[in-house]
Length: 164
Image (cartoon, rainbow, N blue to C red; front, side, top):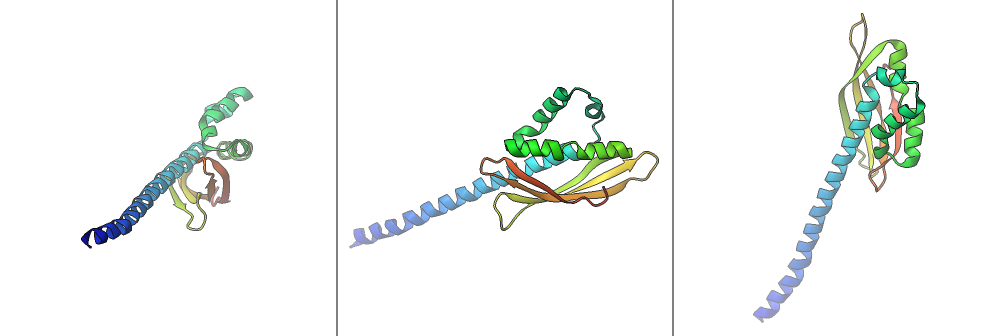
């Protein structure tokens, strides 16, 4: 009778133990993926919002600019989103700062994962802006980024650009 009880306990404990291990591994994997996504968002925003990058603005060779942006951003985006990002957003803040005579520097970036949609993150970047001869001011840029299962950005939307 003792053998029978031990066998039944093993049949109950083993699946529970395996389930616990799988749950732990899934949460570790999810956490590592989130960290990777948050790092990618922060890197893209820092490249995009610190500036203007006078060297790039003054380049006249489109191939040189294309190569520069490809090295800077392409690994973070799907092919389609990379093309959209480069044509719409990549140069926007640098050019706006340059034309207005401002310097921008990222002071702080907050990234929160969406509780309802996996792979989606909301961000808020606080920028310090300064025009020569003026006091430093603060501006914020917020938005939403979505990643696919290959850890590539499929969407980036800017929702609020207060102060810019």
